[in-house]
Amino acid sequence: MNAAPDRRRLLAVLAACIAIVAVLVIVLRSPDPVDAPAGQPAVTVPAPAQARVRAALTRDDEAIDGVPGYAPFVAIGGAKHKQIALTFDDGPGPTTPALLDHLQAHAVPATFFLIGHAIAQHTDLVLRELDAGFSVGTHTDSHDALASRPSADQQDQILAAADRITRISRHAVRLFRPPYGSYDANTLRIVRAERMLMVLWSIDPGDYSAKRPRQIVDATLAAARPGAIVLLHDGPGARPKTLAAVRMLVPALRRRGYKLVSVPELLRDDPPPRRQPAPRGAGR
Image (tube, rainbow, N blue to C red; front, side, top):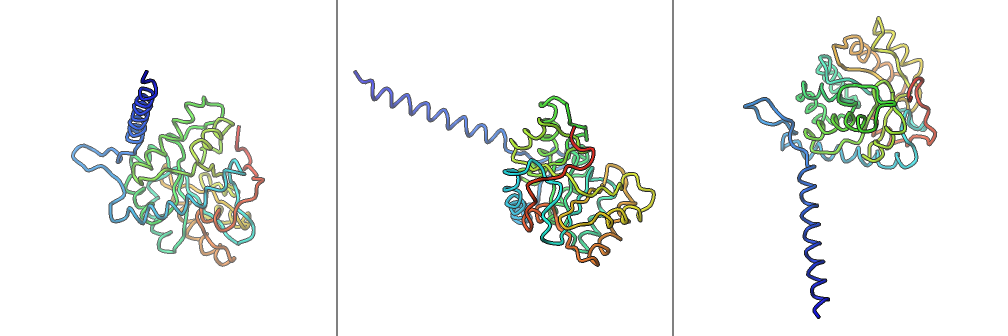
């Protein structure tokens, strides 16, 4: 009649099994460094920079944390402060090094939404973005429109690029931008489950189709307002017009009294309103 000791032993065995399973899950989900060509070391943030990069990404996380609780996405920040966030999609690409040179030389924060395939080709540029303190997010693995695609396909696209970034940064990705602004209810469920914030935009100056840099500058300045999020591109191919426009746009915005910030800075300094206007054509 030793039912009680037997029960305790059974519970102890079950607890040990649960602990082992939990450890295995953590190990299996832990990011590995990005696969490198044969004979080359795997790529991740160098040890001397890891603490600095981790601290910057943690600050971004803290700014992001409060928003998904009341807004399914953000397209514009608050209007209390005269701040604007420049964001760049579809990179890294051939224009990215010169763009980073200019942004760093003029102390301009920015946010980059990265394509998975481009990350694999330009891992050194992702490292540079992280090391310089820029904010980064996933822009899917192959830039597919997500709306109405099966939920599993959407999740694969979103997380494939995020995982590539995480293997480099050693930090979970918290920002996401859907290609073409294409999303549906499944997208929002996936993003929420992954504790990501979907970032849209309030200004699209059409840099991907502009004939002259001045068109990009004029369109941005005409729509500029406190809290604006500007959609620009640094890939997939060369973007010389965007680069030239940024060189004119940065001083022009500053002359108008705007402070240039990253998306997380915008969220932290001036939390976005609850009602977020989706850009024209975004969604399904």
